[in-house]
Image 1 (cartoon, rainbow, N blue to C red):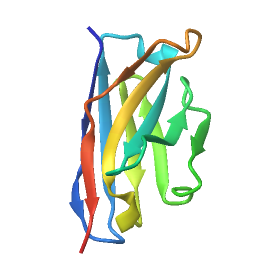
Image 2: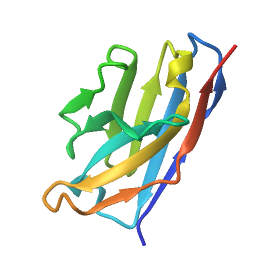
Image 3: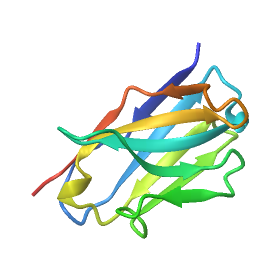
Length: 119
């Protein structure tokens, strides 16, 4: 079955960096756009960053532009989110999402990884 497994979350001080990883299995990775979402306590899940199936197209939420970078390695079936200059408002559970490039209603979610930015 399809599995998306996130890792790399943790506690970091403001201004620090973290790199999240999402390892995918059970799907043809190159046929999926990959996305990172986050959900803070009491808030709805929100899209943070997206990358096209070939990795050539990326988009970011305004709140993270210039600080976060999404990338993917199709040979390793893995998508990354490099997060720099972290702020307390980045504190959330971060989720990996895979969405098929043609059948857009076909999508999968990881279990989430907690990121806490605090001094």
